[in-house]
Image (tube, rainbow, N blue to C red; front, side, top):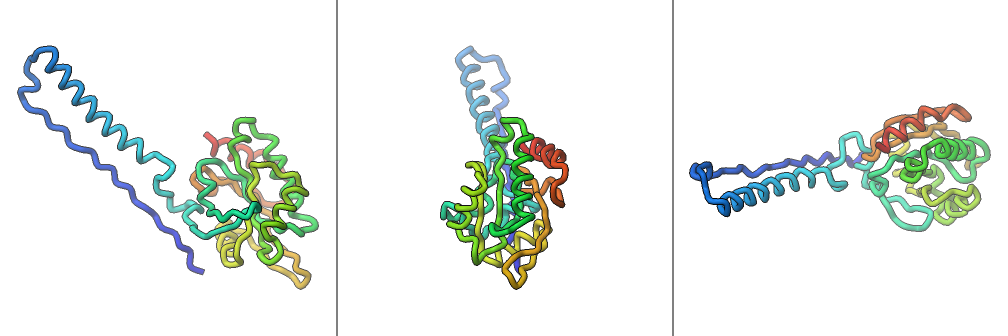
Length: 222
């Protein structure tokens, strides 16, 4: 499957400053003030250019999952891309709503992780569940799951087409397969993304220690 990833390159160009030789000679106070004002204006332009490079719209890194421009639908029925998560730490997992064992545990562990975070970090963090089950986990089904699991406003539940699910699972290192009953065997993996969408930590397994994952979220929030 072809993944459309593009690395944008930003170039910062600074304007050369030149001053006449007589600008260094003694001058009346008003002329000196005008010179200082001109220099201050040029400095402000340079500083503004530098700051512009640090805005959220700056190019993504080559390792960012937010390079993917695939469309997803959240449980409110809104079409989004992963890049809408940019700018905050993310705790993500892949799951399916009709799971009878592992997925409720994963969600419980994500909640437990959130409870260990300092309040300011917890408020900034986003918790994301992406469904394997494109056929049954419609936005409406995911919204019902949100209510059933009592998930707050800082949780995002995503439905995608099978190709999008497969692509994301591959990049996250998540394996899954569907059996004859429609149930999924899958990796039990919680992933922490930094604000730029880069994987900073992964925790495999069920009912384990979440302290390292919590540390990764706190670090990502700085």
